[in-house]
Image (cartoon, rainbow, N blue to C red; front, side, top):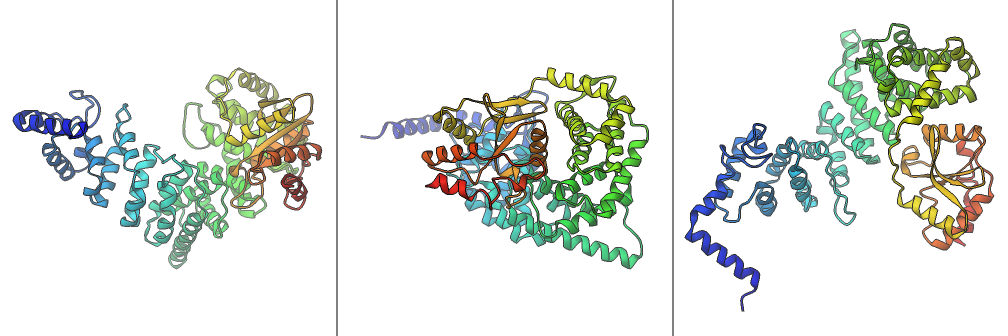
Length: 526
């Protein structure tokens, strides 16, 4: 009474023993001449990732393949013998397959299978090996999406924080980049990275003083610090040593006259709230000097002429609504530089820069009368009008509604409140618009807040401010305030729609603030 599956396997083994050439045919697939680990066998682009990475590893895999009668491919052999590999060998395998350029997603499938027991693998690795493992998964954009399974990056965070003293500046920069790519906000890890970078920058500054000279060149430490600052800005994280790192890096970059990084720093200064510091003023002076020069052609990707840098500067200049002649002049010069670079070929503008130009025009019209007058004086308003017409012709990428968006929509429907989801109000898209009313509802997830606080980030504040000044009543639902029970959600929305919208000047003083929103939560939970 042998089970059918075991019976089939027994018959297959007998066939292999009687015809060993069949087994050798499978094994020959993993030979140097006819390797089938990547791409199509026999093609000119066919390269075995294991053989390219390490000949010893390739020899070991080939040896196992020749002794395995069920061998089909390494993508199946490696996970099937997962526990026979040493941890360091698994890291090398992941590194090898992450560099594979095949289009059939074999590398992603193999990396996904190796995530099965990652909680057992990570404690057996050193800090440097964990960095290499995360680098392989980041290169292929592979991450565990099953909430019941262990996430590689979340599980690696505490281990990386404990081993932060072992990492080189390049490794510190890589770690911050990994978590920025996947939008993972690990506060404890970034606190540890912050302390380590601040220590290295202090040591470098002490050496500069001993040598009595300034370091005005881009070093791996400066690059790592810039990567860290960019990640903190993208993830809205604030660490204890963030300000010290910012100004230590700013001094070096300004001395090296690195315009591209100076533009990134002035945007980060606006996000971090350092705009009034004298060092930031020096950064703006350097950026303004570069804008006064003749911009390079539009096809150039160097320095401030790239579209990404243009967009960074535009947002940094409109975040603060306070009157400032220097910022107004810089904003007008920047719009003029964009016109000079792309005015003859507006089709070359990407959707992001087009939208940022529209936001800058709206901010000048509503809040910056001096900048608006300067734009009119330099005859830049027709150019902005053309950009706006181009934006209306662009097909916006579809915005996926989150689970909370759908829950809010369902609760509004239960209250018989007619509404539209993802309403376009150029240059913005409102999450919910109540029909026949001027009310908008913004559903704010964790990425709308600074670090682990309840303070809104600058982009959310700017959007709220500009929409409010156009006559909209913008209400907000923070992710941490949304009730769990359905009846509580109905009470929550009923009370919210009856309350006045937050003022345009300060979103932090809105009814959603901790001091004024308690009555809504209490009523919803009642």
